[in-house]
Image 1 (tube, one colour):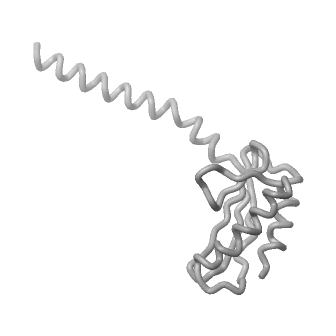
Image 2 (cartoon, rainbow, N blue to C red):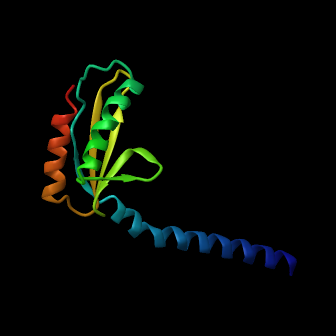
Length: 124
């Protein structure tokens, strides 16, 4: 009887885990349907990652102060526009900078034009 209970409980755990995995698949698929664009890597006057962030983040703060984007709490290099668009500042070790735009569902025209504006601001 003890062997039957052990097999039954392990089988129950396996089936439950399988059901949870299958149940989460549609959510994972939907999370990957976002669209977006990137500014591409911009060669700038900085020569290392930290000095790149020291120049790029104040540019993004300027856009926050203008009311065009909002800061994401606890993420110095991540900003949002509404509930749909995320702007992610990335600096390479050699000092180059790019800003990725990630939209959930489709990107609005204002997010796309702001991405173009950010691209022009990230030239120093």
